Amino acid sequence: MDKQRDLKIHGDVLKSARENKGLDQEALADAVCLKSWHITQMEGSEEYFYFYSAQLKINAAKKIGKYLELEESSYLF
Image 1 (spheres, rainbow, N blue to C red):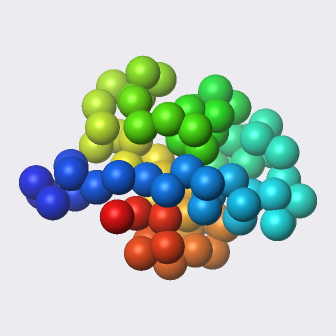
Image 2: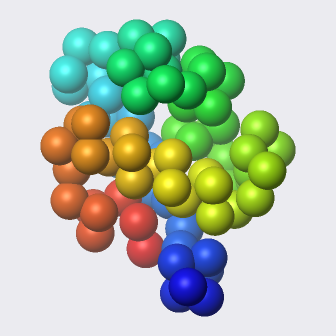
């Protein structure tokens, strides 16, 4: 569990994948049951202000990555 907590997100990879699918932040947020400000923060910040914890942000990133059909290793490090 500690390894997962220490993961970082490549927000630029998520953003590129979203844009390549022709989705805006609102459409992606709706598709994965998040708010658009979650997507904004996911794509641009290591902070987790809109998430209760870093772990919840990682879980949300995995949900987004799965929806965008990405390998976890491409956006988590």
